[in-house]
Each structure stands twice: as structure tokens, then as C-alpha cells.
Image (tube, rainbow over all chains, first blue to last red; front, top):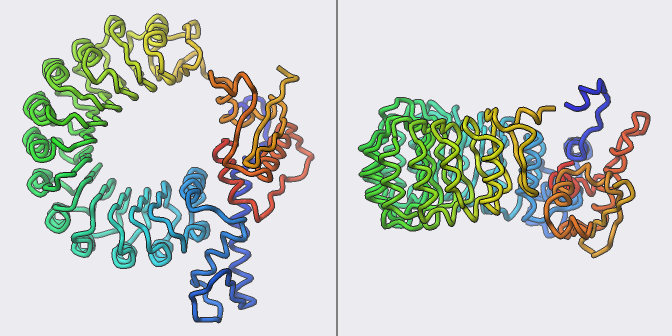
Length: 431
Length: 94
């Protein structure tokens, strides 16, 4: 952006993009060379008895990594991140991850990986236990079943956007994963239905320890969930943005918490707007009272919950391990809830606090804020926040390093900010 | 600040002095230096996860970018170091 303002058009590419284009070019070159010369590329101890060149020979892939100087298994996930960030993960660069001993792989941007890519991934990475595929739009029925069949150790699957996979395939998948699947999170698809949910729960329910749904447009019967979650070690539940408001209601939440409240470490109910104070009092307070291990609580956009229930929750229930709390856009919450939070046991453990859009908060509530471990605070669109509050927060919370103040127009360039605290979102900071 | 030098230390323990302005091209290094860490006082940064060859190349790139010369030839990266260099570049945000 600075270059544009200076009317400069000459931009030096980043070192990352230089490296990536170098890698992609060379993989393609190597492929071509191998095909035309028909030379087997064998490095190290070959287990492949077929001596003629085979494009899918596992040795090709380890050779590939050797050509680029080799890479340790620990660094492969960093490589995946770097490629995803640059939107450069495709069937070509995917080859860098094949034939490894990796047990966990995370791809944050799979939009350019074809279904064939997934199939080769499943064949040549047989040790995978945990697989995360975000934006996996090209993952199709055949590829998902391949993953099920070829990855015998797979127990955790996190998918975002697998919209090509249809109802019968999901059911087949869960039948195949019976007794194996421990963690399953899925988001952004309209082909996952109630029938698939019951298939998931019937086949894999007793083993599940982590379950998540977000923006699932054909999933309505969330009330089915609680009765199947019987694993004593169940630790993460995330139900976000149901299609109809009433799909996740107070009754469902209370039933779920009564079943797994004791062992939960992470609870996320973002966008479940039907939830009222009833859930907070009869669910949260009642079943999280004996918990003591909850680390993450996120209840964004719950516009029906009020100070009455939240004050009751924070005063009766201690969250001694709570690290992340998000109350973003719970617009009916005011000073009382927040002050009660600042006085509760959770204040000593919170690292990350999100109070975005709690427009009823006044300056006064921040005078009670002494959170010794707090690193990151989001108080964007809390309109009462001004320079004095920013200064006060810096003084009282010794470890805070990041403060978001988007839309707080009383925070100006004159604010006194202590060393080590970064403020983002000030109007005066625009380029 | 123009005379200041920062020392980058590689896996092998070898020190590489770089001009302050050159190495702050990397936002990671810039933040390390500007926060209240020991590095901000001693101006020595240990990058023990990267070997000598990689650090040298990284410095070469930062100097190339610092010059910002339109006439200069494209920056060359050897094939056999591109993976590790990519990880270093990602870490240093350059």
C-alpha cells in the first residue's frame, strides 16, 4: 500500500514467493524429465521392486525433498502453513508431503488440490492420525472413502467446506470409521444432513472426544447429540451458527452440558442465538460448577443473555483454568457481568478476552480490571473507551501486549500507550 | 540509528553482522528488537533453527531488497536450499 501511495509500480517479490515459484517450477521440470528419460529416481533403501519408472513410486517423493535440500518432519507443518498462506498449495506442491512419517497434517487452504491429490495423499501418508483440510472444495466422494480406507490410523478429521460429499457417502464413511474416529469437526457444507448426524453418533459416538459443527445448512436435529456422547474424556464441543435459530435451543444445550459438562475443556456456542438466560443458569452454572478444567468459552452473538444470568454464573461458578473468553456481540451484557468477571477466580488465568461490541460498557467497569495474565484484549466498538481507559488498561494489566480498538473513535493519536503494548484499529493510525 | 548493527547468530554459532535498517525489513526481527526483550538491548538475535548457509542467503535477500534497485537482476535461490529458505522466510516474514 505504501508503494501505491508513492506512485511506485516496481515491487520486489517476497523471499517466500521466490522460493515457492522455484520449488513449483522444479517439481514440474523434474516430472517432465522423469517421464521423457524414463529414469527411475531412487534414493536410499528402495522397497519398490518395480524398477521401471513409475510416477507414483514412493521413492520419487523422498527424492523430491532431497533435491530441495531435505526437510525435517517437524518442519513439514511449517512448510504447509507457508504454502497455504501464499495460496500455493496445489497438486504439484502437495508432492512435498508424500511418503513421510507424519502423523498430523494441517492444510489451511486446499482450494487448489484436486480429488486425485487427496487420493495420492491418502496412499502415500499412511501414518496420519490427524488430518485438517480447510477450504477443501474439491474433495469428492471417492477421495473421502479413499481417506477412510487407506489411513488406518486416522482418528481426527477436521474439514471445512467439503460440499461435494453427499449424504450416502457420509454415512458410508462413518460406518467405515466405526470405533476409530475420536475427533470430528465440520463446517460450511449443505450436504451433511440429520441422517448423517445420527450415523456419526451411532457409529462413532462412544469414541468421540471432540465434536464440532459450524454453518451446516442441512443439519437441524442437534437435540440428538447429548444421548450419544458417553465418553468420559469428552473435551471439546463446538456448535456454531445453526441454520435455524431454534435448532440449538436451551433444552439442547442443557442436555448436552448435563452429559459432558464435567470433562469439557472447550465450549463454543457462537451464533446460537436462541440461547437465553435459562441455558446459562440451568446449564452452565449447574453443570460446569464441578468442572474446574474449562479453558475456552466462546458465546458470541448471544443477544438474549443478560446481566442477570452472567453475574450469577461468574459469582457461583469458578473457572480457575479459563484462558480464552469471548463475549463478542452479546449486546445485552453490561457493566455488572464484566465487573463480576473481573472479580471472579477466572481473572488470574485469562489470556485472551473478547468484549467486541459490548456497547453498554462504560469507562467505570475498566477501573476494576486487573488481569495479570491477559495478553490480548478486543474492545472494538465499545464506544465509551477513550484515551484514559487505554492508558489505565496498560497500567493495570501488566502483560497485555495487544489491544484492539476498532470503531472506538474516542481513542486518538494522543493516547498514552506503554512500551510493549500494540494498539490496532485507531482511526488516527491509517496509512 | 544509522550506524547500528545487529548480529544474527546461526545454528553453528557463527555471528553475522547486519545493518539495523536492513534487518528490520523482517517484521519478526523488527518486533524482536523493539519489544522489551534482551535482544533489544544487546542487538544479538539467535536464530538457532537455521544454519549458516540459510542465514547468509536471508541477509543477502534483505540487502537486495534494501537496495531496491530496479535495474538489478532477479534474486536467485539455489534449488537445494529452497525448502529451508522458505521456512526461514515464513518465520521472518520477508
